[in-house]
Length: 226
Length: 263
Image (cartoon, each protein chain N blue to C red):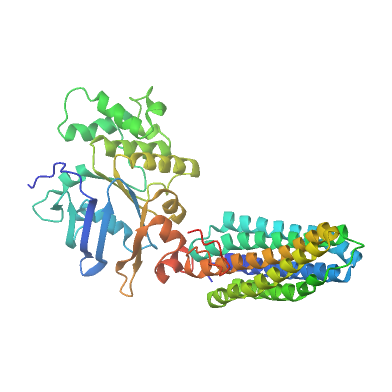
């Protein structure tokens, strides 16, 4: 094969991105589980493990740069490598969200989880499932699958809005809980942001396949400022 | 002899239509259609033997020097089909100059290498200004200003190539053809030639044949990809803006070639 070295490197980088995705997915699930169950030990573990996610991301970035410098990729190969850089950055930021949830858990340690947060588990499961499939579509260059995933963000937004309004109601009824509820709301917001970043990964898959950079319109763009 | 004087600015420096070049019965280049943009750098890329050099040599009738070569189609330059038999190739070569793969200075002084072309084109009197201007445009003047009477062969290979470019531009052509102009040069000399080409494109139309895709990507505005068909005739696969062609080519054959999957 003419580009055996380049193909090998890309294959390895795709595996690395899948590894990074599974690290982020696990961190997110554990962070949310620890929050809901008030498990500070698990939260601390997630918090500290973020360093491993960052380290993996830097390794991917370094390997992408070495591949670009030594293999001079063009066309689809170039788009794949540019997208690997982008996607690894997205995943690392998602890892920061998981770390943020763990931090909130540690900050709110002794206080109970407020009832509106019960929906966070479902919201998280939908998001990490979207994440897993988005990275699978990315490494398989499956633009069709990538186009379908962003629609599922509506459900995540719907649950987030429900949690948000539930917490606002709670704050109205119990002003003493404002600080605590606000912290919890940030945890839900982190998951909501994570699903937005999943859409960015889908955009990269479409870019690899078509060469076109388009932002996927989100149906919750209620501001419609255009 | 048709009038080859500079005419009003047209959109294209060259318009190539249905160009075919034969060596005896062998069809080397098949049915090429290209519009070469004025004051831009156009790169011609393709694998060895695909007809890139044959194509670029047809742009100033250099193929006429090869026995049993004949060309069909048309190449419109300044509203004139330069393939017409009534057109004298030597006149065209003054307007469409060529720089070759290996620097080929004459075994004369640096000064005379430039002045020679001016003299045979009938320019008399004090040639200094024209020689200096060409050397400056070729970014060589500072290197050689104190040794203009030295042999051109005493220069480094990179300097010799810039001297050949100076010799080409001294006669004020419209178009400069370059056939692998940097392939015999080291990386530093190559980058100097590339910088020079980018500078020259302000005043000239440049067409370059190169094996080096990164070089084409670095310097050209437009790229033409030539491939061989099953009969080994070169044909145009894709032609377009370099940025587009190297990031998202339209044609799968181009994609396969520039990503190194064949060729």
